Length: 510
Image 1 (cartoon, rainbow, N blue to C red):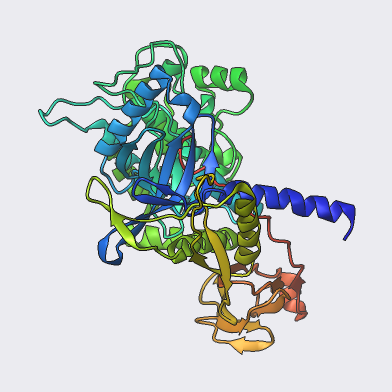
Image 2: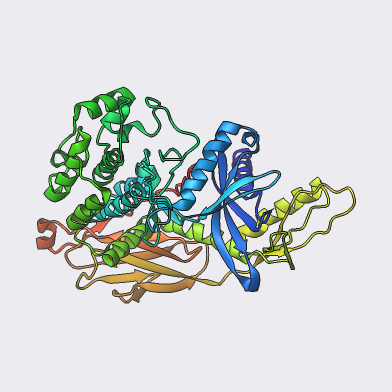
């Protein structure tokens, strides 16, 4: 082994250790999984909630950093966020389950989101030269507008409006799940009645490119601020460029002056009805923007021309096509968390049933177990065995893992766009598969198999796929030119390398 390759492995092992160092540790009635992301205020972990009779739920735990637990201003802000988040119950808003606190921890249990932020979705689509369809962008916007309409109109138990304004709608805070759901994230800086920590007028929070003119100038604002931000978000998702580009000063000048490029200068096929909606949403004057947000949702649904079922199915198909590697990696981490064996259960003081977690004998033993776990997890499945505690031991939770042989075969599916091409032929590892359902079981391994796709009137495509796990690969065929079609020559496209996995996904506010 060369020195450079040794260093690369050490670096990767360190990253893996950081993501997995709490794997299997208890936190209240939860068992922690891998680290999903971290910021200056908190870390977010995948976690499992255990209950009686084999009940379990995969959640996300937002765990506040220990050094902030004595910061009263921060704690007041976090409690405001948690109380507001737990009041918001809408299918297009990330769900908050409970706020928990003990002597050493403060954390929020939230819905686990299996997918990607909209910012990553449209970027990946552009990288693969498969821009998101305009109708799909409008449908995504309609679901976000539904969520904003619900939040804007939310009332307390006495019927008094909360007056919620999100203030941070952006492509990073719209999340797309792999099964085609749209989720609005991060009400952490939202303005609402009753919050103990409020932002003073003139103190700007949020992202400048999506900031309404009145907010940027420190003037009074209302819920139309979110309409503007959503319009800027959809403009960027549809075209791949910001509505107001440049650095902060340039972007703010354009926002205040209403300098907005006609999308037809970028993409001549941009639909007029959608441009009309976005232009109104990005009006400089708040009263000129469509309102309420529920009305904007209906307008966007009209421009999309999709039913709820059609929109979700189309979005799910696009996500599977754009993120095959990420989908497989996340699914593996969820399966790993679910496979962790449960020790004998014991009730907590609150009556909840949780699993016991073993303790390590010494720091050197923990290091050895961590090294063994890293080797075992690289091989596939996992199982857990226990370690006992000796007097004077360092009591840090640890889980030791051993390998379980994975399935000897994997499912390899091919999703061809456009669908239903007459005469389509798909060959996986040399075997012709049904064009209507191109799926084949192939031996699991690290050596790639060859996939060939051919159809009359289209450029043929070849690609190599590593059958290391179940996956669906999306392939878009391009019509051949008239000259090539007339000559009768077969044209084949060069295989383009798949983009690398995006790494840790920022799916929750930190």
